[in-house]
Length: 228
Ligand code: DER
Image (cartoon, rainbow, N blue to C red; front, side, top):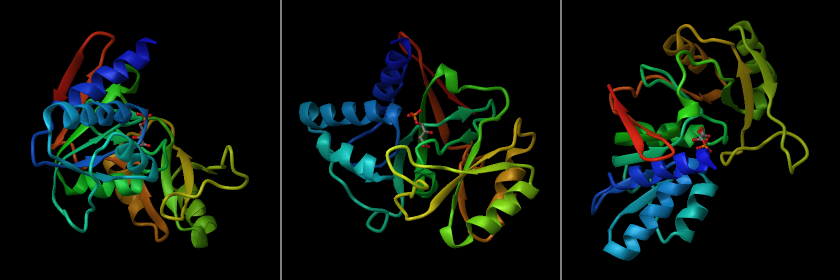
């Protein structure tokens, strides 16, 4: 499909930014999948020498499949580059992430990276962030956190499993509460307000990394590259 071609173009293009000796944050989701595929090919064909920090079980499993050596944030608290996806990107390069329930580790990796490449197709680019904001919540406090999120204007919904009865449980053992706020007028402020709720462990708003983000927008043929 045209969208699959766009994702592939974005993912492959991002892999070209990775150089020998780099430690690479490996994001989660279907677009980063193509970046990993290309990195695996460069390792085999060019002898590219890198190591990746996976942001989820999915990322670790895929990295192994593509022969990308794995390391950890403990071994490399500073990363050269991270490659990740997003659900929405606004003109200021602020993001909503978390469709894949991996945004807690993704934000830690994004924070540790010098540069962040966000790989998307055109459908992710919006004027105003208005997608539901996923919040990773400590199960112990899910009711109290949900009430605080509702007080911020959200319609909080506990994310239920599809092939699992009961709530989605993240790779960190927590729940996800999806919060629809409608159009978000001040995403920076909202991210900070959610972060101040005890038990709200991390939300999918990424508003503080705009200076180090480069967005690679896959098109059916080629890509557009956007940074501030
Ligand atoms: O869950 C996440 O944060 C993913 O990066 C998601 O936002 C993008 O996934 P996709 O590339 O499959 O659309």
